[in-house]
Length: 213
Image (cartoon, rainbow, N blue to C red; front, side, top):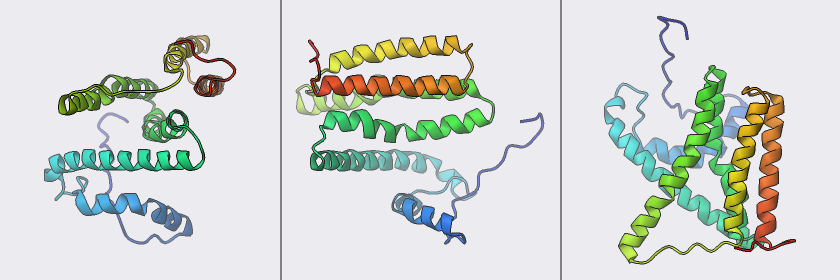
């Protein structure tokens, strides 16, 4: 953005019926999510809703918790119906679904020329999930019920070890491409992800070897 240029003001949410078929399909698909938010949260992009931003912030957190609960519940039901273990559903479908917000934000800032912000957002969100998102519910559970949370997963130790190795491979891959995001690096990242998922699923299903720890 050039010096002295005014930033674009975000437009308020418009819930009127769209005029094109493509927008109508999108409207219907996102309506179950957008309508509750529109009815319960003040739109801070409007002059009237700006002063209610604390209410919108706290309400958004509550809605995220509710949608997350439903997402995990429904994913577990789908996994039971298709005879897919919960660990596999979490490693594949839930992991991909929860990463969509990171993808959207990274694409937006990358198009604006902030490549470092796009990368740091993706890395930082995962660190936040591991160091804050998981420990806080476990801490609350231990305080309320007075007992630890049991996590049962075959090959978890091996999966964590593979994850650290993948982190090393990611850093080496970025260095090999001269610290630039290009098509070759993107293909390499896709390959590393599929390798990680394949090896982790092999440990989960104990095929061909079982994780010794």
